[in-house]
Image (cartoon, rainbow, N blue to C red):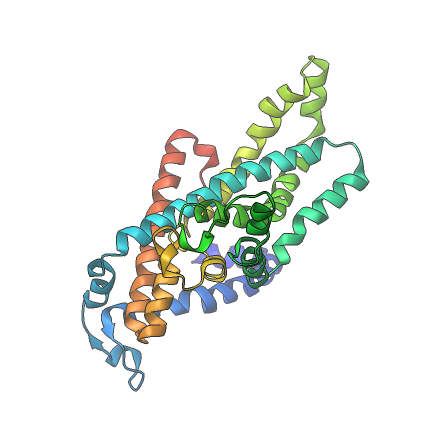
Length: 304
């Protein structure tokens, strides 16, 4: 305790700057964790939290006995893995490509154009997708008819949607991720590249042996952050693109959309909290497991 007080007195300006962040996370991240108790209760809005009837694991039965748990968990994990690895791969490629371009004007213009989709709402993305793939007046089916081909009913077939959803999510986040990796590339000392040039290394050899290894800590940090939410489907993305189309649920239903439909059908706070607890618990286990593996293989890259 004395050591902490001594440290506080010595770096009081730094602690004062840190205070708003600590207060923010305490209020919005740690205080709401008490609400996990609702997952084990029969929620009654007329009584206080800890006076609700304790029902144990009953709220979790909704998820385990519904028969849909495997499908929505599989979809959520596979979609997030595709988002993480395809998205990060393309972001790294774009960042390396932009960093090697000589012209500043083109580089800045390309960054701005790539960043623009990040600010577009999923409502507009959903409308854009509908106008592309609508059976009646969609752009794709109109082109197929012009080419003398039979129209394809996208909204009755699940096969193309896994690619459509992954494509639009990766497209929307490409600019944001590219800027992060570009910032990491800019922090690499020029001395490494200059020394490699003197030794006769080509541009591809410098990318392979200098740039990519230097980006690994950033990639692993983003990977760990993303894995923490791997059981959280992007509700906006899926709901705005697919909506309540039951024909596509086998390939597009994720935990968030499933819980949303259940909650809007019968308002059950206990069940909704149980689903959120299920997502968070396995997300925590996954982050701890991956960080443990990274610490055992490459200790310097581990977050904790």
